[in-house]
Image (tube, rainbow over all chains, first blue to last red; front, side, top):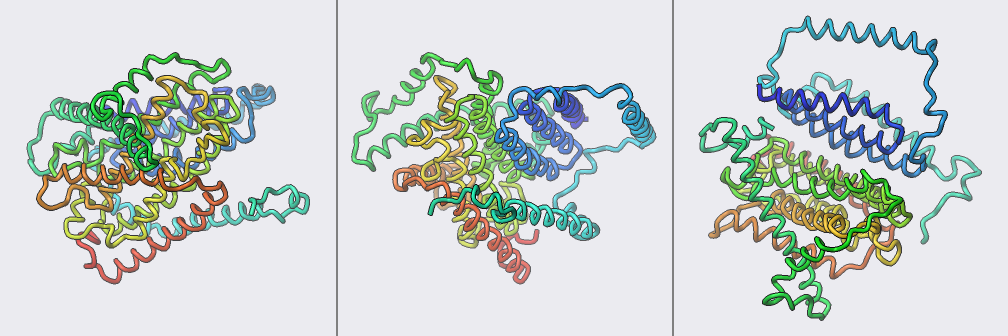
Length: 178
Length: 346
């Protein structure tokens, strides 16, 4: 019961801020709404009995990944308002297929919501140890695969960032004074 | 929130208060803590000025009251009554929000710091307390970045960019250093981490982790020798160049509160928290925190500022590998000798 006092406000905040991410015109504000949205989702996780997941959500997403988003937005100096091309609305014809797909998913989600038996979130609090055992025991293949994806990303990043990957950039690359 | 409150009141004396009473108790404890914290922060500024003056062969502020003890009060009045100059070219909302973010994130973390074994000395014993600290400290970065961006001035922007790079770089070794402690204690709860140190402080079994965490903590608080985001002789005052009056004071307050926060975390995680002979537990905690705050000031008086490439090299090429090696070796040792540490493998 008490968890509901956290769950509903946090869920409402998460939904509103997520909407604002795509509605706001200033890219820096969009990033900040995204941070708030992630914090709201973290609180939702917390109220559902997953404090470890909630903390990781804030540390990894809000604390590390979005900082890089903000960094890039600031570095590229996209400006306070997006350019006109970004503000163009899609035509009605372009909206038909995505709209149809969204409605299908929404109806299915609602059906699932009303079909599922209500669970008591407070009774099913997941300890960090149980989560770790599930991840590295039963689901170790998933952990390995996601580690592989991250490794590929890191290798790609290093390759792109190498000073000699493109002969043109060699002279322009900035070396630290020695 | 209710779960946090419930956790706060669920330890040794198994008296279950009704919800509204739990809320009131938590609020009262929070208010007392805030009062003590703000007073101590003001006196930390005073202590820093006096100690730096002593170390540099000056006198320091000694006019207001006996030995200058009323200086913090004078400072607060000065800052509150100063004229506020808001740059017209700033982004209003974020410009106002930035100083609040750092103050809120650094003060909120004190909710999980245990100052003594009893329920009365901790606001809430969150079972992921250490992660709560890391989460809020990673959110604190936004304050600096947004202050730099929203000021819309080149010095502030440079300071903000430097701060982002620095704080992201040093957050990794800081978190990884704490993993060693979590492995040894077998819990994320700060109170249980202190309890696990009743025999041996973790500084003894985690000396490398302690060193890495200490260096990363100084870098995280953006103080000399890591104060590149506000290097005076290069970029005026860095990210807070455009701030004045009380908004500047909030940045200042945030810096000193986070120094005390990092001192508290180091004391709790590595120096045995409230454990110590003869004196009452909270007093031991205060002594350790005080000594660590003095240490922070001492570092500022001793070391010159690092060059930027040295700063990045230290973080990525030295501290990060050391922290990873520390995690691997700690895990291997704990696996080989499960009885090495009291409370291990819980």
